Length: 74
Image (cartoon, rainbow, N blue to C red; front, top):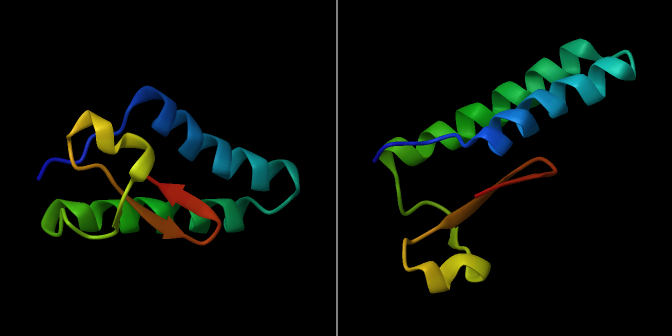
């Protein structure tokens, strides 16, 4: 499976880091962003990982979601 990051997804990853950086926790932001990326890349080898995303089921593309900390990955 190919993992694709959309423009909004890339921006969301940047926002994770920037949010923590503004609060003075840049290292925490980098770690959080890295954990989200690592969890997302698991989909490359395990595309059926996670639960089916009900809100996107009508598209028929098999969207699934994962949770990493307080972040939802679709």
